[in-house]
Length: 457
Image (cartoon, rainbow, N blue to C red; front, side, top):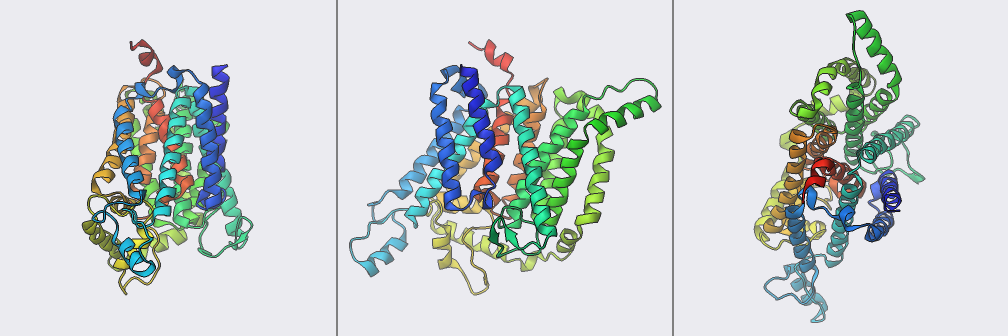
């Protein structure tokens, strides 16, 4: 009974991850509302599971849970009206001057946006929690990673078809931006690139794990024949990687490509230092040749635009650097309590200069935006909580003798989104964050051996 319910919750979570990119990465209000409603239903279903199934103590998540609770407390406090005059955002004083004394101020400059982002944080925490408790079973964990890779491949195929057919539509809507870039079901090509990068890492992890099962015996000729036969049977994995890389290159996202390469390097380094992937390290060399060949073919076919953009990059004239500088200036004005989650667009206009000719409703640096919106103390709590989760993955990499590929993937996915978050806002897109936390939850769950957990009193 309980196993069936857990399986039902896991299937529901996989469906959420598959459907999250529809439409626009669930960034539109109705889409992310539906996403939040579905996650809430699955969380309610966990109430019928035994405490042993829903406890997260064995994964050493007490510290990050407390830190996240502090972040949520601060974020909720920012939305409370009738805050003392010395704590309210100055914007509310200007509103009082214009509208009269009926205005109740708060720490958050945009109280409605702050409440929405509080709910988003709860949504993300719910996805991570569901992923942890359902991803403890290695078979389910493998199905989850395969689901990410396969669904990403399907969205990649859709993005390629739209791109090659004229690139004028976003689902059933006329496209209004990025006419020269593949964006799939996303508006922004950088967000699509980050999503594809996560799916690419999942596909590569599955491919490498599959290659580790090659049993090479006999002389060199027989080994080569066995390797070719095995690779032929795993052609679907290789095809998924090729499609994902091709779609990623056609997004023409420099940051997305660089972050994906960084994530791949992190994956290979993690595998190198994982004691439980010894055979994977030895056999992995057989996958390097086909992998490099596919990458070269994909770049020759689709990488011209991205390489041209890389060659034309002029960091000194990049408007994003100026936005970062102005965001830091704003942080100095609101260092402790911040301006409220989701309030960047309301406050940044005050600091905007004539040199910035574009409208910025989000900073192109998630770290700086979090520090500005939450305040330095709460932002540090959030960053430390995520660091604790990464430490759990590192622990799993160093101690797991089986299924170490999952914490390796979690660390690689974190490297990808962590690097890209310094130059763009992809983690502000619900679908990207949902897929990332789904993979991270599986990684954390598989970082602790179920056998060792069962032996604990």
